[in-house]
Amino acid sequence: QVQLVESGGGLVQAGGSLRLSCAASGSRFSINAMAWYRQAPGKQRELVATITKGGSTNYADSVKGRFTISRDNAKNTVDLQINSLKPEDTAVYYCNAFIDARSYWGQGTQVTVSS
Image (cartoon, rainbow, N blue to C red; front, top):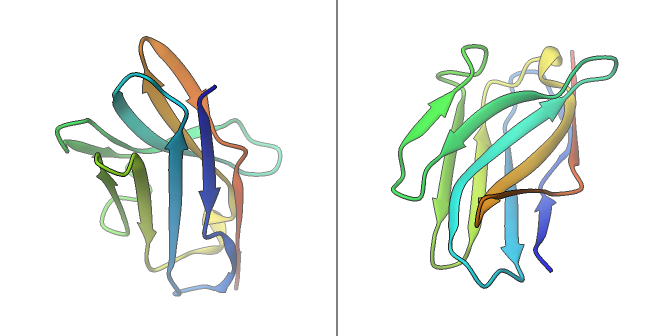
C-alpha cells in the first residue's frame, strides 16, 4: 500500500518561509513524477510545482521565483521550499506521486499566511 505523508505546514506571517516535506512509502516500483498541489477554501485544487525523476521542474506562474521543489530519489521524498509567503498562498498543500501508471495523494498539510 503506497502512502504519502506530508509535514511542515503551519501558520506564518506574510513574507515568511516554510518548508514542506513529503515521504512516500510502500511502493515496489520507482516513483516517476512528483508534485505539489494546493487547495484554498472554496477553490479547486491547483497544481503548484512538479518534478520529474530526473529533476526537471515546472511551476505555476503564481509561485515562480518564490517556491522551489526538490526531491531525493534514494529516500523517496519531495520537498517544497516556500519563500516570500503571501496571504493568497493560504491553502491545504497536497503531495502527489505518479507510480506505475497510478496517481497517489497525501492527506494534505495546512499552510496559513497571516497579513
